[in-house]
Length: 179
Image (cartoon, rainbow, N blue to C red; front, side):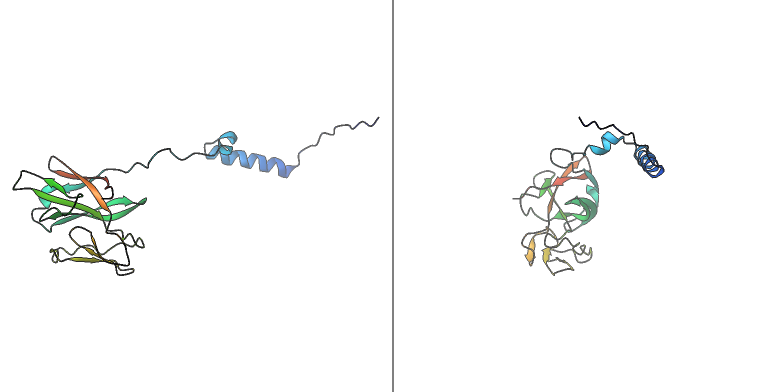
């Protein structure tokens, strides 16, 4: 009968240093070896989109006036616009005030849906019903008042954002659902 004896191996200096170095890195990161081996799972459910205070309603004292603010669009903060309209344009228009003296607000991202470039910000001196915002990357044109597509290559308008009035302050509360 053949019998094998077990040999006990002594670790060499390099192995010991690797083990100590790895343990030190894990300790510095605040994780144990078991935690490092366990993959972290992303949170379940839709991403939480923050609310952003845009500014006072009084800053929008006439149609065509606007405020800019930063709001996440596809995970990145993009410059966005809240503008006062002369009349409601679609289901994304917020009507504020008494009948006959309503104020109509519309917010949209300046991120071009075609290639993700930032569309030129409206010029306050030129903000009129026929104002056009142009994407510097591929030339898509958007209505400067409500963000609607006027000319491609983009196939949809600028992303509409939901707004709420709380007291005299206007907040962006999320991305508006498609109409």
